Image 1: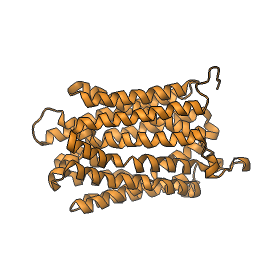
Image 2: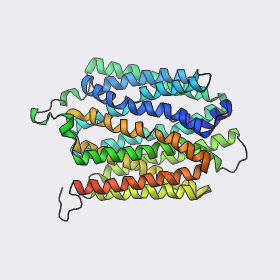
Image 3: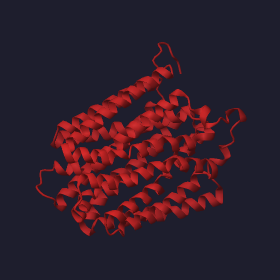
Image 4: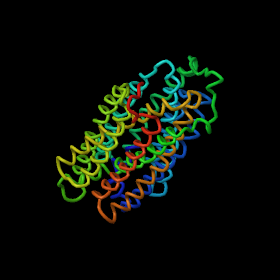
Length: 382
């Protein structure tokens, strides 16, 4: 999903597209990424997360091949939409597995989400640097074709594991009848507030990942579009995203703290401050703010997932995370097109200022979440 933002400038040059048009293309993939999440979560609860993950790996790789074969903006948009639809299977299925495992992991489920996030950030950080390196040498289509290889290699072993052993969560999926609650009754106020937070932070994530490589490339001090400019933007974006893995690691440990809600709120506020900093700085300070943003944002991902696991009944793990990612990536997908319009009219720095304002709204929801769960009560014990 991060290949397209990494080769944005190359696509722009070939098809002579504006930032708005590029944002709409990104929007096509991200919208399907979000819309498919809810049915993906429900499917994972029904047939097992491991099987759904295998389907995603194969389908996503085939979609990457299709994107690489596109001949114009319309076929590119369709290809990105199919890729987003296939990719929507990943998060609800994988997170649903961990929700079920919460019954044996207990509070260590935060560390599990953190470790999973670290590995995810390896891929996130690798995408810009590898995609731009391949794209500037062999063309942006080759970057998508290369991106299809890992999925093809992993799909068969994943499916074979399911066929031979069944889903690893099967043995733990028996839920007492008293815990078999409907989706409607499971929607407590704290869970609804987490849904709202994930929606806003999903908007922030889609906005800054879509334009981060291009923004950093523009600050490289190289006039005109050159291969060096594209590679430098991709390299800086990779450096920033790589630090997100440390955020996951730190958050996984911090979620065992008795004051985890306070840490949660402070992290959202700091996330907003980093976005504001990116909008008003250049050069090394900009890169530093980007790195810090990556650290705090991905730490928030682990924190949010952990709180979600605490608030979700095991029998509805996939469904709850499906709703979460449908909101986060569905509504969040509007960031690429709306922020593209902001960039076109007001400039790329303003994009990050606007996203900072959205993050402030997320901080208000976290404050309400702490109030709803009694976290701000003096003398509360865990």
